[in-house]
Every structure is written in structure tokens, then in C-alpha cells.
Length: 349
Image 1 (cartoon, rainbow, N blue to C red):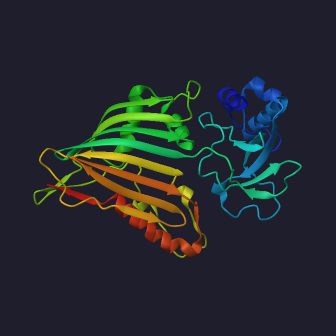
Image 2: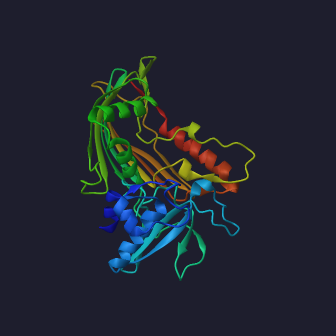
Image 3: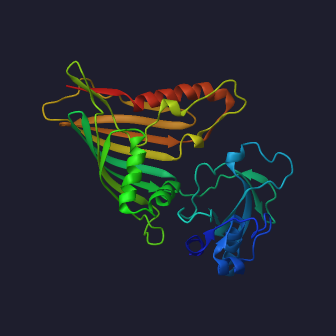
């Protein structure tokens, strides 16, 4: 209730002439003005928790985008502030500067940040890795129908954690027409020729939502995605969250490892895709099932034929988010194999 009150009623604002760079504003001032920066809203959260008899503390953070090896020497160069409440012996961390992020949820890019909890029992600088947090996940159920060189697609997806926050921040303030325009812009980056038929959301508005999960339902057509070669139709599966070989560029020599949060925004992604073949058509060769696993990622593609439909499943799970320097070459080879599996060409005749 306290968390929801703050993210709903207090707007994030950081203006140097109004706020100190170090000292938070008085909680009563934040409530009256309804604006505050990260340390202001975090201090308000701690104060309100204490009034309610809940143990709560502040924590200073130096965010991950500043590097993995910052603050090696004593310093006050923190650039963010979050808070922690302890309920029933369990710690719940909160990010209070976003009006769309569900309770106890953080983006993958913040995990691993250096944090310093301000309490009498903790004096050490730690990597942020909460024992309890909302998972950042995406799930899709997709129906694809092949029609000549085109694909008609109907899809429902569910977004949790920071993924729901992203959907809300992008689409909530847009009109229905602008929502479709935004979707078309995003889709055009991968499929230049397309037509959007419908787009709807559930739980998009944070203040009215009944769940932390944002649902999306859409229908659209991808034009000229199948090529005719020697009497066969050649095409790739339109995975919604596929990997691209060009997304991982490693320039040698390197002095540091790879931060996978810059490559993968989710903890898990799952998709079930039903591909309906035209009457009288069949696959020239079976879909190639793939199962890959290493210390960092689990990846799997599988399929089953059901009449004139090919039911495909894709699953991805991020296990560790940092590849050390001595394992970069192995991960590059792994990622290339994963991207090639996502982009495998199928033939129908």
C-alpha cells in the first residue's frame, strides 16, 4: 500500500536548484509538493514504513551502467537511492522512481549494481542481488498462417516484472491509433512490409490494474517474407524475441568480460508458435530441434507435427549475466549457434 501510494502520487523529478545533491528533502515536503528525486521518495518510503511499524532502510547505489569495478576506493560517488523493507523476516527491495514498475521488481540492468545499505548492521559495499524479487519474463502464444508469400499472425503475450513496466511506459499514454503506429514502427525494423490489424492490452494502466502482468493481443500480416525457389517456398519462423548474430559484437583485444544485461533484457522468455500450412503443402524437411546450455544461458527449440500444423516451442533462460574474459570466445560460439537456430530456413512444397 505504501509503495503504491508513492509511485501513484509522487512524481519523479530531479532539479539541481530545488534539491540537494546529497541531502534528501523532508518527507512532509515531498508529500505536499508531490515531487521528489530518488533519495526523496526512498526517504519518504522509509519514514512511512516506520510509522506503520515496518522495519525499513535506505541504500545508496552506483548503477551497473557505470561499470563493474567502480568504488574500489572510498568515495561518495553514488548516483541512485533505493529502499528495503523487512516483513516477516524477509527483505523486499523497492525502486520508487518509476510509476510503472511492479513492487519488488528491478530491471536486469540494475542487478549487480554496487549498493551500500545505510543501517547499523551493514557497512559493506555489496553487489545488488536480492534473494526475493519479481522475475522479468515474457511469454507468447502465436498463430501463424502461411498465405502465398505472406504470413498472417495472431499473438497473445504476457509480460511480467520490468517487461510490464516497459510496455506501460511506452503505450499507456498513447491513443489507440498511436499505439498501432508505434507497433508498426517497431515491427518495420524487422519486417519492412507489414499491416497491423488490431492491438489491445490488459492491465496497461498501473492505477487501474488488477495484476502486475501486462497482457497484449494483436493481429498483423507480414508481407513478402517467403521466397520462391525451385518450386519451394523458403521462409524463417517469425519468433517474437529472436536472437540476431549482429547483436553481439566483440572487438579484440578486450580487458573486460561481457555484460549480458545489455544483450538480454529478460530472465526468461517462452513462446509457443503454431504454423498452419496451406492445404496440399508439406515441409520439405523436418524443423531442426536445438537444445543448448552453458553456464550463462539455457536455450531450446522443439517441434511437433499436428495435421497441417507445425507446433513450435522456444524457451530461453538467463542463468548468469556476466561472461568473464576467459570465456568470451566460447560464449561467442554459443550465441552464434543460438542465433542461427532462431534464423533457420524452412522449405515448404
